[in-house]
Image (cartoon, rainbow, N blue to C red; front, side):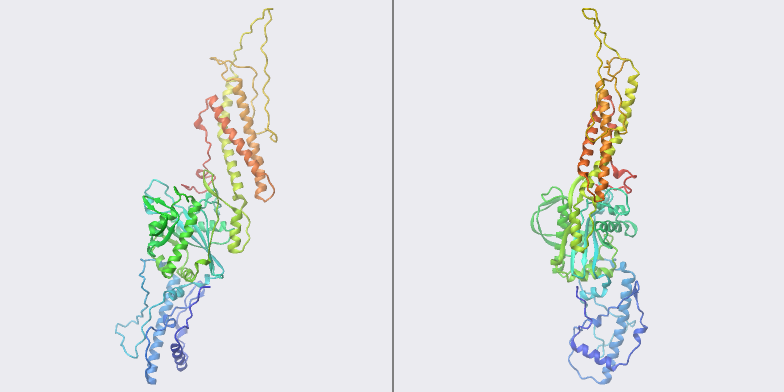
Length: 606
């Protein structure tokens, strides 16, 4: 555990003098007259600097009369009471309105010196009876005094969120809504004095609690109203989604930054020395692989790059983000800047968001100060990047996800079977099949009407030629073609098969226009539609078994749905060409994210 400051660590002489004074002075009731301030019913012990730090001045021994000693102790006692009152008010202000501590500019690196105003402009006389000057405060003790240690037990989850917002992007030609493109759970184990960082890839196919539809994980902030939603609703929705990723383990706290805040943070700590493992370019800026010193812009570019590099892709970018976070932490520890975190946070006006109080931030800062980077574990709920649902999604490796949760929290959680790669592929195949069936219904109506009109027209038959013996050669009757149904399929779908005439029409004005071959093509197409419907129904039954953890044949039946859907599309295009159906009437892609009956919240995934 992080060390707790000892309020009795002054030098032996002072302790002895304090005890002598206590023995000489009668018991006072002043403490009862002081107000007691609390936060959510908890008593807050005020921070009194003179009780913690010894004086920096060493005074020589001097003989003092009993009367002078009594005056000296009286002055010190009065000064202590005043400081106690000031400390109480200071603690009360922090806990009553912690957000006020985030206003203003970045403070200087000079340690704060607390002075006492006793309401009298008369200069305090110097001499043996004058109060001892208040010593310069140790930053660690300042943070300790502000720390809300009630949260420092067991494991606390804090979600670190990076929003892809920058002011210049408000006027560009790209999307104008912003996603939580960086999501990292910081599992702080106060009992074991360690931290585990769990990366959540932004493209993860995930459930957004309370919101209907298919979304990437980085859209959770949009489902909550955006990064600027009142009351931090967007960030809280992202916390809910992160909790779902953990199998229901709560994620109650967050710190979120925009892109400008990342630059400000790095610049505030003087940049970072880093060994780039790749060379890359970003917005005209070039970076070469190898040891280098990165400023805020350089770190931001490194965290964002994922295109046109050998180590590109979103998953590799996630790994770079974790490595950079460790590098920044290490750099701040070496420069003794960890204790400046509360001050640094106060400098990000409008670019940093959190639901942590100043006391909680101080508690985390205090913990980080004594944390060894060897006690920082790194994990990633990675998976397979697949072009599915019209976008590139990361299909989480559920076995790995369960293993991470067990390792970090010691809890067994089930796999989210409906969010496995197999189930996602089935779901997308089913959605495509439904779209194909829907978009070809107009084609079926069109061809049926064409054939109905064509059947009302006469056919022109060739005149029989007489044979040498005077007999007329009869025209052969061609039986209707037989349709073969694949094994396991009945072909009894919702599309009615048209029975064709055996006569071969002649294409002339006023006569039937469609041949027997075209009519056979239409019959085959209707049969294919029926078979696709049946394959879809069978796959849905297997999907239900899969989601229940029962034995199933989902993978094979998913492939059947894909195969029949592909055949339907191919046949539909040929049929449309033969019957003159407009090709632009087909809608082969289902844009579910634009369908309010499917996706409850419209999100621009670009």
